Image (cartoon, rainbow, N blue to C red; front, top):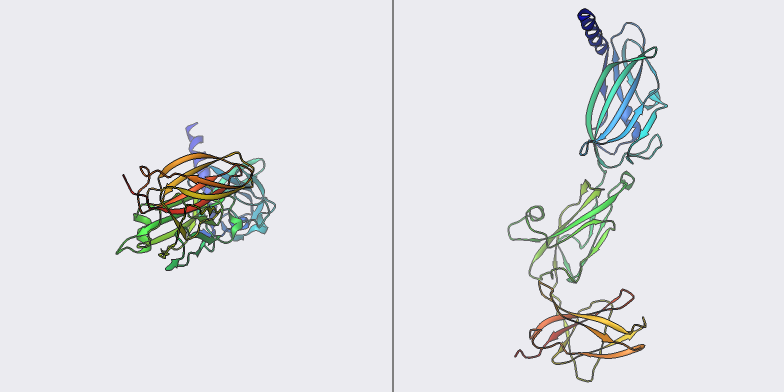
Length: 363
């Protein structure tokens, strides 16, 4: 029995030595499914042998299988044979994850993978493993996402800029494309790349499926005396795919247009924010057109500083059509000569705004 065992081991070593396999898959880049079958097989057998090739693709990060494939039977004569997709078709695929479309020349989705190959010699109903190999590869876009606005080293006209970028290419290699945007302060002596790596973000937007981000009013106010750096990372699901360059910009110091509010003047609220700032002492008069037909509407007074703290909230009664309203800011809640934002929120999910400077005396 022991002699029989060693005979089987010897035959196995001899079989494994009959075929050498060299897989010719590029280590990185855009990958067509057909490219997975490019390889060189070298047979040392004196006679022709019949083999089939088994392929198994796994996710290198999670070790989860994503794709398997079994070729048709291939005849190997002694010597070298270059194998390509036409030699192995038809291939029986099993899709365990959405890594590619199901056409022959479909593109694999972005990610890092491990490809393992087995060459099985067919002898009747028995199959013997005669060669095996595993190699890692990555599917990456040809072009990363590209930043668009604000332009590099530009001067933004607003302290609420809109950040936009262009998608990576080709976009068809992504099945769950999303973006992370990071904005940091650029300190003296830092390069933009160092700032992104080392500094705590001023603002971050994660898993964004749009190619733009509007800087929110509720975020930390951007300082006209500082420079900022920003970058965008493209992901396929939770897996990193590509990153843009790092661009910088500054916010232009806009001199607000000050309009003194008289007791009988009512300021029309607006849906958007502009540079106009009004002054208010004891009473904040404003007009609001109740197109939504609400009976009440909530409001907030928000400090325009680094904390953006809500200083006062309340509810106002409304009638249909134009409403002339007054709010007493309260000198114990607001600070004299500071900037504030009045914000109303109606039943249509709309925000209406007015910026003002409180000039009341502190008691």
